[in-house]
Image 1 (cartoon, rainbow, N blue to C red):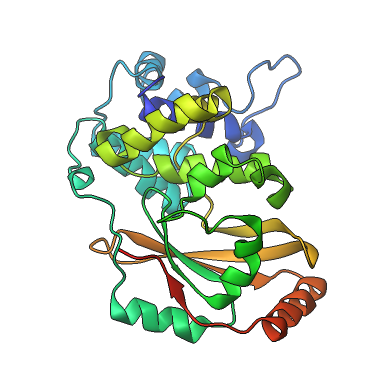
Image 2: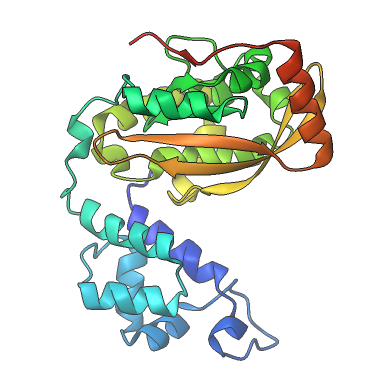
Length: 283
């Protein structure tokens, strides 16, 4: 399994940029998706050999000036630029946040925030995908699907280890991609707790997990639309927003909202059918 996350990210971003986006002719005989290495090198003002070394992992310490030039050439978004900077630091082992165990406790003010979000389906996760607390609205959605089983429940283990997950998530491949990207977002294998979970899932889930780890960059979507197949209400389209808590918490809050009128009506029916209160796992 490759540990060249910097090279993987640069290559996937290069292949995602079309020549037209940077003012280059497409040409009839182009075989490479996106930009060629030579084109990226020209745009960034570096040599082709240096781009090759970075993508192959033979050089993992580009200067801040080169990082900025590559970010400009690749038309990176603000979050992608932050991720690129993080990768150049973690390549040298400079990030040490992985020494601390993933947080299992929830601050009182965060609990109060979750209570205020009711009846919206909202869930709090730590960096390895443990579900730490959730609203009753989330329990009404996720409980019947088996997502909340375990102490603590873990979204990665559910997606890759529970056969119900493929029914629960009609777009399972996309959900699996996003979960792997979330695990890879940060120090990744430099974090022993993430590394232990990755090793576990590589054994239990096999190629479906390992291939994603090898090929996907660690940049999960912070917002989007997901589909859940609820046993009582059918397939629901839910828009989600991810809110990162302060670094000391090392947690993220995902809030779901109805993406269409049918989903809004279904959530209203669930809310009226089974009222509840904020739930959390035992620490």
